[in-house]
Image (cartoon, rainbow, N blue to C red; front, side, top):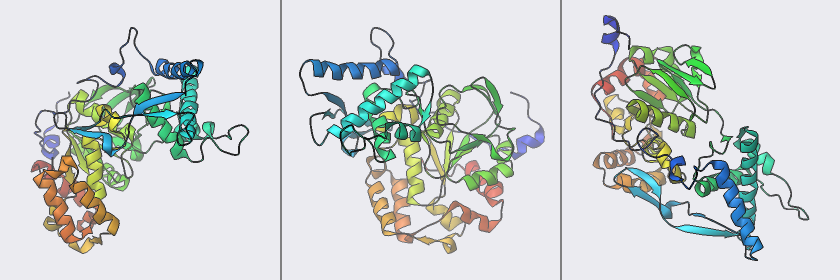
Length: 398
């Protein structure tokens, strides 16, 4: 690492984090791919073929064709206190072809599996939207479409992740790009060398599949992930990443899987602390929860995405008082209040005094605030005072 000039040292926030407690990621544990180790190494394609063969076996035996998979949903999600992540339990369900309640989902799963196998055969990738249109057709001799909405094909892909043990990215299905990153990092992507510090005002656009990216140089003390792209643009224009020797990353709202995986790789492979910056509302708190523990709907992917030692930087309810943001309050809706109550009861928050205090304060305020309310203190207040002071003083929630 190059020696820093004296003036550069002064501008940096000194970070001292505990050793990473994350147990996920390729550098620390088995990935989803490694859990499948039969006589010969399993691949996404062989698992899809095995699914097809099992259905053919049912048919040739005169049995009702079936697909067995783990139950997805809160009733089968377990909070693992050791790894501090959400995982799927051992409840399973069977989906039968000759069952009025199952037949359409059965066909959707088989059709999407066939599409994924074709993508792997020809070594091409498709978007979630592409897969929807490839699957959307009328079932012969009926007026029924195999899929009517994209959420149906999306759910079939998630089912295939559970059935095969491979992520949708391994099935050659990608989502839209919805993130930007900047920092003193050099990577290799599809044979191209890319320097995150030299990509202009837009930064590097984060793809949905970051598995094959190779890190050639990582010079940073920590990563700040922010919910708002507008906040990222402010920090990027102010060269926050350069002054503080960090990486700044954003999406627009909820994190994409590509972003979560990239954050986890930086955390596990390069031991970089991850700080989360969101609006001061229950949905911002949820974004943090998903990054830290994993999501209920994707509990089967927690091993490749959850980051147990991530910290919540803000905006906290305490910031509202400290920085006099009450005049920027936005009144809570009934939906907000219901969500607060729901999150308070999540096992991973229920016994956490600091987080219970945040929920209580939000309910007492009966209001929320946006990150951009900090701009009332000055256009660069967030980059010159708010973030440097909070990080220097370690004012975050675990």
